[in-house]
Length: 107
Image 1 (cartoon, helix red, strand yellow):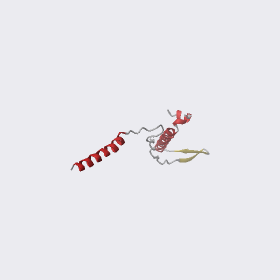
Image 2: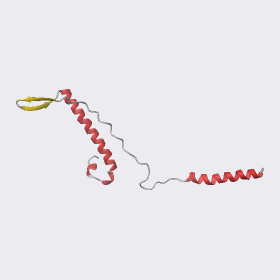
Image 3: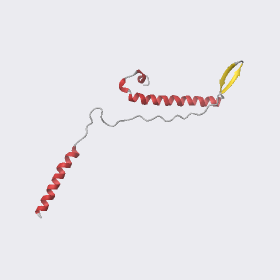
Image 4: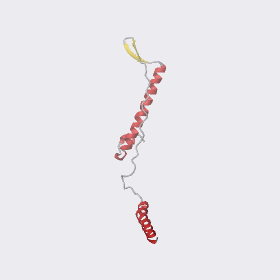
C-alpha cells in the first residue's frame, strides 16, 4: 500500500515540476514580432451607368446628359474618390516607416 502511494506521489511531483514552470512562462515578443495587423480592404466600387448624349451644336460637338444622369455621374465620381482615398490609406499604412510626402498629405 505504501509503495503505491510513493509511486503516485512521485508521479504527481514530476507532473507539477514539468507543467507548472511551463505555465508560468510569459511570452515577451521582441521588437518586430507580434500579430500583424492589416487595414481593411475598401468596399468594392458600385458605379451607376450614365447615358451621355452627343449633340452637334453649330458645327461643334457637345456632350451632355440629363440632370438625373449628371447626378449619377457625380455620385460615381464621389464613389471613385472614396475608393482611391481608402486605397491610399491602406498603402500609407504599410509605407508609414518611409516618411513619404505622399502619405503626409493624407493626414
